Length: 606
Image (cartoon, rainbow, N blue to C red):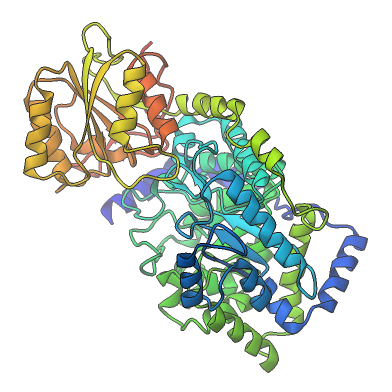
């Protein structure tokens, strides 16, 4: 709590003028107003829908399987157990859902050609309904540590890495490339960019998913990515409104409480959302957080009419699609039962209900609420029209299908991969280099041991970080040995690393969210004690350097995806200049009231 309050005060002092300037920007509607003819046509379409079809349009649901009609038997079993249908086609036929969300763990995203086939199968099922309507297919392709579609798609640096790069042009280009590849696979709505301002170093759920801790800088990068994604023909989604960046609770497992005052919200949390709206954002995702200064009822923002209608719709002037964060997360389930959550969300001002834990319960609850009059038909038709207008804007009514030729031409193209490498190269941040060890010389530092944490790999990796980094250095002319020591190395693993360091010229150790009691600190200390120079690379949060003593140099990559590790290897080897600058402050471990490295810190070789 002390760290968080210090960060908040620092940010308020440093960025109040710039943030206020962004906050005062005139609000804009989410998208150009549709023609009267288009609206009238879509209203006629809604009038032809049964009540069940109307309710279905409000839901975006998960489904297991690589195929819309013929998934593997294990996926059929999971679908029957969790949803009561066998496959995506049956889900659409039974519940008339307006959208489907793809997950890697649901086996939706094996490879680009399969994804395109799945998308086409889903669209065929949507057009086979009594009232034919294309579906809005979505996913969380934030890049960095959250990516549902992996290689051979192009994987870009994540948000905090782009924040370290500081280039709105790079952020926009990254989103435009990523959006074009999603569109080629039939994915029309991306739940990105994250618009949360990460002012709490201990934030367990946002962290490097945020562009940083400076509201004005975050706002500029959010707007750039909105324009990039939407120029590629897909819907961007800024999240998590009204701002999830100052919490130590993960809303997947509990209900975070944001203690910002209304003024602090205006100066810290609001600017990126205002910027997204001004940039024409197509959709905004809610947060399962309590925000007493905005709504003293203790309802999560997802269920708060004062926040979603009073602030987002009326004060900020936003008239686009509002989608809930996943309704199977504990943060939205603690106060009300699963049958009340979707109804209360719609009453609060939500349009899309994302991934309820039990679709039958949620779907029937909304249906019953309309039949009883708690929800008016006019209220749900208001949301349906917003959803259909978005589908119309994205061209789904004209042609919702994609081609394998489009996949081959677009996804993971050489030009896209080269652009990802160039963008990543500008993000690697050199934090310390007191003796000038970096860049490494192949003459004096030829033998390199790469050890460290190998956390579960995001989709943008071809292997453990130690293996990828050692391979990248090897390609640059070093003799490398890779040894995974894990995120919590025991004494035996530490002894193995110390033994492996014997005879090496330098040790590169990847660290992952080092805490005061982490055995990663013991590992680094033991390696330093060998006398071999140690280079520490923080492969997730950049705060690790504050807890590591005696190291010869420290680098931050903000993620352990291939593109960022390859860029770090080029920087370490002197093939690229370190250009990144911290987008968050790093506080002293022994005195958190003092900033060790401020926002903007970053060394170069020149």
